[in-house]
Image 1: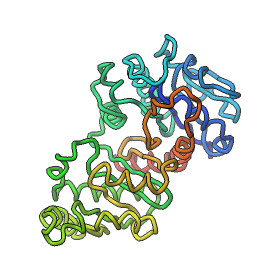
Image 2: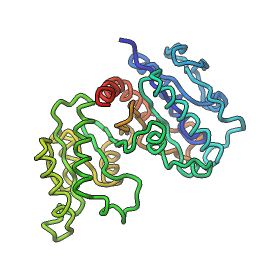
Image 3: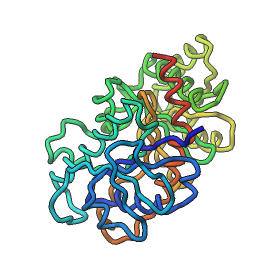
Length: 333
């Protein structure tokens, strides 16, 4: 079977995205599994290029896809000099252009999956882009209303009920209906990754799962009834499991996935286990999107010291799961 073509938009051009993309492609073992195609601008790539050769193409099928060469599509979104490490409208527009072009190629079926480098939310806003982040852009451009984030690191898989909302707003999003729907999606997406009969745990919100109302009522009023309803619908689901235990238990294989109720609850667990090898997947799109779990790191951008480990792992994940996810999505729609 041909190696899948993985599209790699380089993210914010004045962050570490271009650097980690280029460094990742210096790992020759990647080329045994995937055909990586970078989306960016030549002027940006040349800033971070070391010993690899640039090969500009206009169509994904034209790439060489061999170690020692970076195949890329020159998007033509950046023309000026590069000043690393600051929020710039031009950088926000360029990052958006790289991602948009890659999405277009994926929707046309010319690339199998995406592996995205970090973008900067403030740069997007400064550029007038009406979307908060990667997920919002992907949702808008693919017509998928609510894609779902999955973090993977070692044996731990974490889904998120809520993501970028204020902490004070979290409880109002924890509803019976929302949790039941999320558990269904967790089950579907784990099957897309090849897990035949997934067992999902739902994390508790309050300390010790609320202690029967002593520390909070969400477990009794919303989370518990939602889990009961999901079980009645034939889903394998457990909980609410106290959050100080559930992620460790899942990492040891007790559960195939965990539904985290809010952003930091799951992020802290994954990144503490292994920050550099945590991979973020966006599920529910017509294609798989993989990503590193960190941001643009403006404080070290342009210094050549960024760690590319997460990018390597994300490219591997896109190559490993991209075809399976796309095939399931096509059958289900």
